Amino acid sequence: MGFFRIISRSSKFAVRVKKRFILLLLIYAIIAGFVGALVDDLDSYQTSDLLDQRGVYIEQAEEFSVTGTQGSALVSALNSATLGYSLDDIQMYKYAQLDNQLRIYSFDLSRPWLHPNLNPDIVKTGSFPSSVGEALVPMGDIQKRNSTNGAVIESTIAVGSEFTFTTGANEVTIRVSGIMDPSDYVGSENDDLWFFVDDSTFNDILALYGLDPEADTFVHSMAIPIVIEGSGIPLFDIPTDKDYENVADLEQTIQQDYLPDDVTYGNFNKNAETSPIDVKQKNRLQSLLTFVVAVGFGALFVFLFGMLIAKFRKREIAILKAMGYTRGSIQLSLVTEIFTDAIIGFTVGMGLIQLALLYMSDFEPSTLFRPVSVWISFLIVVLMSLPGTFIITWRSLGVSPMTIFRDK
Image 1 (tube, helix red, strand yellow):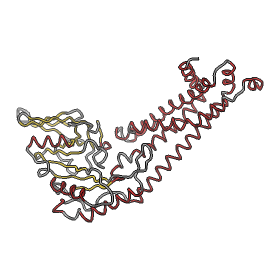
Image 2: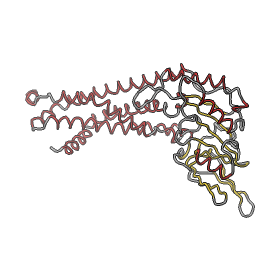
Image 3: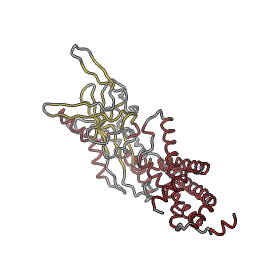
Image 4: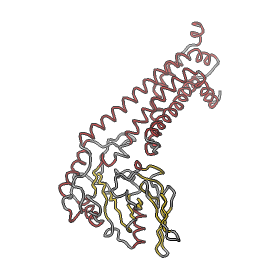
């Protein structure tokens, strides 16, 4: 029988036995939900917890208390400091007040997760900027413009709104890609128009206004990461204890040697932010142990239920052998049946947990699993099914048609 014909018939058979199919689907759905949640937790080491795991965060003590020149001086001093580890690219988040009601902020487009308060998680509507010229605006920001008769017209800015900055023949156009939660930015509740744009667009707008990127700007905050050794775990580059120790040393160095100097480096809050080593170690151990235990129990459940499938299908396998089916064809049939249930169960389980996350967050898109987390979860569910599946098929192929028919 042809390869694709076997797969087609086996897929149909997988869903034909209703009770068995529903039970296996339920098992895979539960496994998919747990694995997805745990993968998303480990994914946070590369996303929402990225800086806390790998570096420290410092923020201005008050508005306009750190100039762009002072921020650059701090970056230069840190990069030239003698440390027992290497610093990664330091990210400086600047802003410029263009007029009384217009302000622009900058961020690095290539590292959207490095800032704890300016990343895809804060997006309420739309999406985080992914290309030059896209912008975030705080929720509730209002555009004001004068009509021809002198009346002031106000309208709330929405995703897709476009704004053009023009000076003579030069212009810069930005498009609003997302609406963000402004709670971590003091002053955003005022009747001001704020744009959060990539570094390149930020500098282009400054040039239109004739402003200097350092002397005429201010620093809101800095993300100061280190280059980690990493755990070497495939797909998840989790910091080691030595990395955590280096981050703690960086925190102490910055607080003692740099933050007290308000004149040279500006007036930052005097505490660099990062979690204690013991908290990071505890969370890492808990995440890894929970993940390993969940995958182990999931594989065990799949194996045990697969054994039941093999037991219930002994007579069918004996008939197939008596009809001249090859070992490879029978093995393909069993594998296809199990993986059909796995794929459907994974889709159902992942869909339900995503819907639950949306419902509990008032339908905020930032709560959904990242696509990479979903694909990794699917890969794990497939891989955890393989050992039991091949053991099951190997045992099933030992069935003797004569023994089965004689027993019946």
